[in-house]
Structure formats: C-alpha cells, structure tokens
Image (cartoon, rainbow, N blue to C red):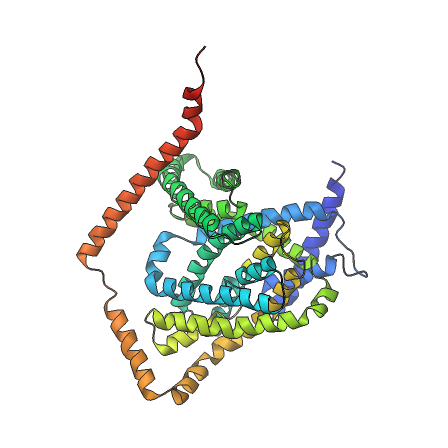
Amino acid sequence: MGHLPGLITDLALILMTGAITTLLFRKIKQPLVLGYIIAGFIVGPYISFTPSVTDIDNVETLAEIGVIFLLFSLGLEFSFRKLKRVGGPASITAIVEIIVITLSGYLLGTWMGWSLMDSVFLGGMLASSSTTIIIKAFDELKIKTQHFTRIVVGVLIVEDIVVIMLMVLLSTISVTQEIEGMETLLSILKLGFFLILWFLAGIFLIPTLLKKAKKLLDEETLLILSIGLCLGMVVLATQVGFSAELGAFIMGSILAETTSAEKIEHLTKPVKDLFGAVFFVSVGMMIDPATIIEYIGPIFWVTLLVLFGKLISTSVGAIISGQPLKQSVQVGMSMAQVGEFAFIVASLGISLGVTSDFLFPVAVGVSAITTFTTPYMIKFSPRLYEYLLRILPVRWVSALNNYSSGTQEIQVKSNWKSILNRYITNVLTNGMITLAIFFISLEFFMPFFAKPYP
C-alpha cells in the first residue's frame, strides 16, 4: 500500500488540472481533448515551475485502462444496423481515403528520412479522423441534418473499424520488424476467423443472457456485468495474441446489438470519461517542448498532408461512391484532421518499442492545428464547390452529375441478390462454427488421445 498515497496525489493533480483546463477550453469553445493534453503538459516532467506527477508507472496503467474503455465505448456506438444504413457510399469513401492517406503518410515518412517502423506508424496515425471534433463542429454550425453529414458519420464508423484492424496488423509487423506478405496474410485470416467466431458466440449468447437476467439487472448490476464482460474479452483477446483494444471494441460491438445497448452506454459513460481523461492527460505528459521545436518541419509537412491529402482522397472516394460533386467536396472538407486514434496508434508503437519518441509530439502538434482549422474548412466548403464549378470544364461537371445519378438509381437490391446473401451468410456461419469445433478438438482432445496407454 506504500504506493497508494503517491497515486492519490497524482490523481488529484491530474483531475484538478484537467478540470481547470477543460473549463477554460469550454469557455473558448475548443475541443476538450486538447484541454486534457494541455493539462498533461502542465503536470508533465518537462515543466519545472509547476507540480509534476511522481508515480508515472501507475498513471500509465490507468491510461491503458482509459484506452480500453474508450474503445469499449466506441464499440457501443457501432452496430451492424448503423453500418447497413450508411451502406456502400460511406464504405467506398472510407476505404479510398484510408488507402491513399496511409500510403501517403508512409511515403512522407520515408521522404523525411524516418525509419521503416516510424513511417509505417505515421501512415497508421493518419488513417482516421476525429469523431468528437467533427460532430462538435456540425453542432456549432447547425448543419447536422444536411445529407452530407450522414455520409461523414458513416465514413467515421468505417474508419474506426478499419483502424482497429490496422492496429492488429501494426502489432504483427512490429514483432517481425518487417512487412512480410505471408505473415500479414496469415494475421488477417486469423483475425477474420476469431472476429467471426467471437461475434457469433457473442450475438447468440450475450443477448440471451441479458434477456434471461433482465428482471435481476438493476443499474448497478448491469454496470458491473458490462465492465466484467469488457475486461473478460480483453483478457481473451490478449491470450489469443491480439490487442486489448480489439477485445474491448469487440465486446462493445456485441453489446451494441442488445436491447440494453443504450442503457449500458449511459451507465459506462462516466467510467469512460474518467479513465479517458487520464489517458489524454498522459498523452500531454509525453510532450517535450524541445522535441516539438526540433520537429517543427515534420509537423508542418504532416499537417499539409492531412489538410490536402484527406480533402482530396475523401472527396475522390465520395465521387467514386456516386455522391454529387457538392456533397463530395463537403465530405472531404469535413474529414481533414487527425483523431484521437492518432495518439492511441502512437502510444502502441512506443509501448511495443518499435517507434521513436518524437511521433507523439508530431501527432499532438498536427492534431492541435487541424482541430482549429476543421470548423473553418467545413464552413468554407460551399465556396470551394463554387470555385470548382468555375474552373472545371462544363462537360466534366455534367459527366460527374450523370455518374452520380446513374449510381444512385442502382442502389436497390434485386430479389436474387438478397437470397444469395442469405445463403452466403448461412454457409459462413456454419463453416466458422465447424472450424471452431475442429480447432478446439485439436487443441484439447487430440493430446488426450495421443497419450500412450500403460
């Protein structure tokens, strides 16, 4: 218990400083995430004239719990019904944007002379935009009901899923220290198998469990059960060889399909806010002003890539998915920033010991700049559209409009496609269950039969 007084002192310092900075940031109408990061910078080891955190190891443990609950909360907000509603346009837009910006980030890191792993993780850091910042900007500009905002929300959902998978692949690449095609393919296949298996087990078992125990579940018991299921899946995921973040996201996604999803999300929100605040403060504690000054050049180039690379790639993806030019430009202008996942990916690289310490200050610097520019870019998007109408040839604009109209006319599925989808779903479901039984038998029963009889 000797460490307890130090931990309590550190928590008091973190939470009080975080409360003061977030009050200030709310007053000036800026994202609270940046307020937490500034609080971490103030109580971090690089500022000598303010009180500093002393028990950094325990704070880092609490920060890891914060990441788990952030991903669990993100999973609760995701559901297959939501993904089905946003459909193909959002998925196509997100995939195009992620591929282009991730590859561009890797090439930029290589051009700046960074190591292989630093460049790879830079690409991963840029793969997602900030849901909280974008939704906040939509609220302040009073445009949440416009059609393009639904596409943006759909893109954010798909981005979150892809980045979770990307983190698993980055962990695999970090172990081998090189990008091997076969190793990566095996990791993808293994990940796909366990994802389908977990979701099948979860969707069949957990909703039934909650339904049977509904009369016994008050708010306190439901909260304890939800957190227990989350941490249990975290342990299972790490035992299988995946990240704790993936396990938390999976359990959140499974619970999102239950009738208690909204209530669970409401009950766990204070827990997520508390530990999430500790995580973002711990991010700020890692900011070294000397490192930011030293790497001001990379921060500048990465910011330019985020602003223009995400704008162009997302707009092109939206056009390919069949959206009109105006909505495509609005979607692209909305996505031009990096999100909270940039900090999580950067911390993953540092915890694995494969990336340099300067990635964190670069991520924070780029995030701060693009956070401030996001509302102005969204507001400026109609003017950019009008400017494009003036400079683009009329036949190009006409061709884009015809393509958009033709694409949207073939959105309705025919009956044979629906029947085929049901057959494919049944085959995949039964096939995965059969494979699961086979592998479990190999693991537990074959060694028993292989023992020699006396």
